[in-house]
Image (cartoon, rainbow, N blue to C red):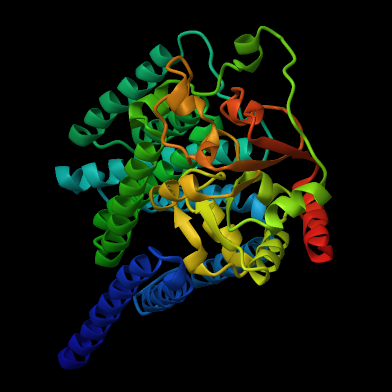
Length: 465
């Protein structure tokens, strides 16, 4: 009997090891568009193994667990399959928040269902506290991020008097109560801590908006990973520790990389309320400045007879659902012998890798996607730069205007191209709320209208030449 028990336990540990390896390989696969689909499948297989092995343990309330799984499947599959590309960032945000909330519940449940909380060692209580606090901050912050991205509330930073003081008081209260729980375990105090952590998560995200949202999503993702790892320690589950650590570490590294791509420190992003002041009008004193615009037929000639065209996609491309049309335009230009590639800024869109995902959906070849550092040297030899839906990531104010809020932010050097075609709906500024001097550059020609409609007309005009 002991030998059988040992064999079953060994099989479970081996299965968990295989699942952990799958998570590592999945993360590796997700580092490149070419291997992302394979990495996603490997990660799903690892998760299936992990969930399956959970049922080999002695579990209670099986009916409730199965019911919860069914509800999750009924909600999750349609949400993932029917979500529009423009809504992908908010879906990532809310799914990430659900993970943080689940980790908080696991840690909280482990504590309250203990026959005697005083029997917990100090390190075990600390593990529970970390899972509850970080998980609650993650789910509350992700919910606010979802609301901003879904436009259920303003996307601009929300500030109020004594905001930092209030946040500091809430954070201090959490720390003090956490020390109380460590030395005098109490379920009621732990519940108060959870509520305060939820409040802090909301207050933490409210002043963040505009171009900082992609960094926020990445940071909250790392929070969820840390919460999952803490909950793994709390219930002595090695697989949760491994998975949480992978997510936390990768999210932290991605956050640092994106902060660097914006030319700003993480504290500056989190506490400066970037985008709260719209400076476009003040910079020009209300003066109406002329811009040059043209028709699709004229611009099609410029594109068709160019040697090199660089396409710069932005959030407006996703809003218009024009990724397939831009691919069609690219194919038509390549038929005419034009060299075409896409310049991708790290924070273009509303989440990390948003443009990569958008263009992958349209089956744009991976080797045509060039990151900022690789693309920038190419602009000086580019005949036409076609900007579709991007704004702040091509704004020359980032290196020309020391007083600008985005000064120092690395951008795509579109202004180095011989000619620029800028597709815009209107002259409204981007998320950063500042005017884009590139629009008034003598080499820039604007094509106003919906991006998909404008691109469709460009495709037709190119075909007719």
